[in-house]
Image (cartoon, rainbow, N blue to C red; front, side, top):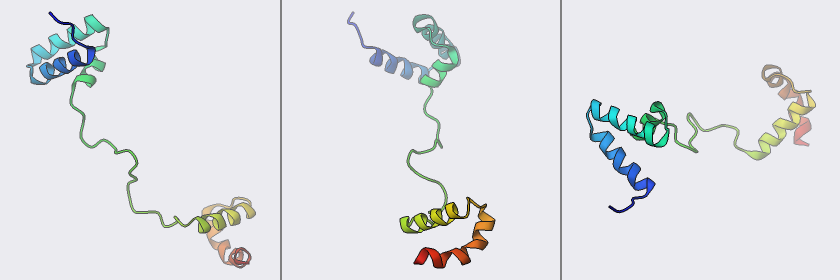
Length: 104
């Protein structure tokens, strides 16, 4: 009998688990628990197919931001800092007075 690698063994067990009945799945979980010391819940997560609807890395939900312009952000941060970090509502009303100073 040839020695198989851990990944190949796990792949075979995963296929058996996916195709097996409830009793067979329980036996496979017992085997993993006894041989490798993996908790049942962790083994279920490893052997189950990946869930749909998981968040994709790098994709932001919702509409694109209006404030992508770096010069705009720099000016906005400057005004926000000079107004002692006002709240957004107060800053919005103060923008009319501060814009001429930033444009210079």
